[in-house]
Length: 307
Image (cartoon, rainbow, N blue to C red; front, side, top):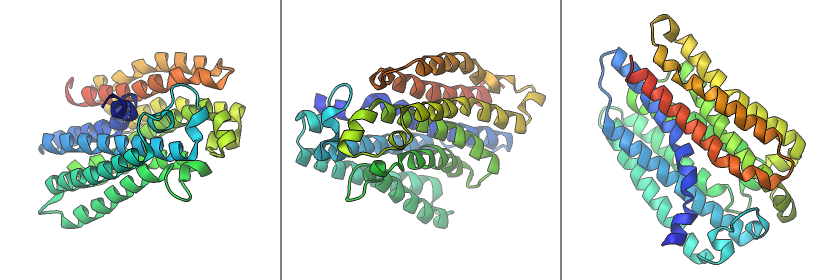
């Protein structure tokens, strides 16, 4: 069991929840302003679905990279399949089981959120849920896994950012507002930054195994510039969201709590820029993920509980 827990890569879970937290609690703030109710059941199910998607993605990556031999020369501890702790056939069954559980949890979430009044949205989001499951699997599995062709950054930005934040917002409000794209972009950029760090760390082993990530295509130095840009923008974009909604004019000052993250993020960026060897980047994966998660929590608290 301990190897399955390791394969689930628990340190990746806070980042995956960031978009759901941000989209859900921005929706809660907006619903409260209009005198409408916010359903905790939808939030709980959305978190469950997100965790299942993330663990499915981690299992699929373990299996896909393991059978291709990509993980054999990776930096740090070998993953379960590559290390022989879990066989490829067992991990394949794990991917299938998680796919089924993810689909069932998705249907349960959408049933609570949309039925019976919003049948059309139910069907649209079922299709979106299936797309999320396929995206989680397709990163490293299949004849042409998109993670091996430098497309991982786009998919992570779309699904961890746009889909996660905008989708969770819609679950509660049954509407779309263009400004929700700002926090969605912020989470998407942080998520892409984590993936890019991961790919920069593994740039040498990926080159040997034929995994042509976007970081590998850029080269280490240009990927570093790309990383700094990814880390520079999210908090600025969140600040723009607050100002567009004129929260500074309505004494909603606690909504700006997330600004305290500028200093630790600045320190992380500086330390990343000082890295000369790819394997030294491993320590920053968790740190950037925690910054993104903390930003989402601070915004959620600032908008809903101190005003």
